[in-house]
Image (cartoon, rainbow, N blue to C red; front, side, top):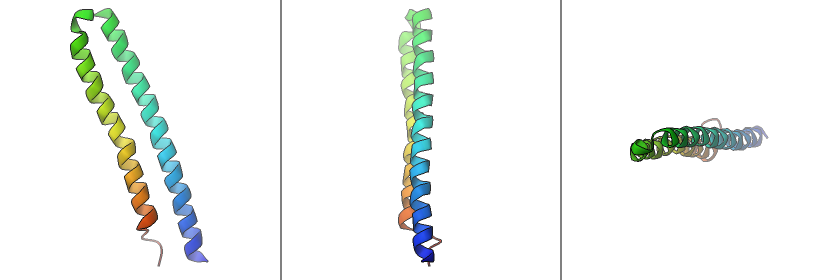
Length: 83
């Protein structure tokens, strides 16, 4: 009975981690992209530099939810609290 409660809590926590990480990444990507488009509109001659920086930033932002979800999955399947 104890193990099932721990596993259930781990699955719920993993789902919450995935949801919050995805929401944070979506908001971060939106902010970075909107600011990059604003910069490109103000200085069109520097658009290629802004675009490269935007892609690097979006890639780094997207890596955080992937890492979070991998850690959550590891904690579900290799749970250190289950005896």
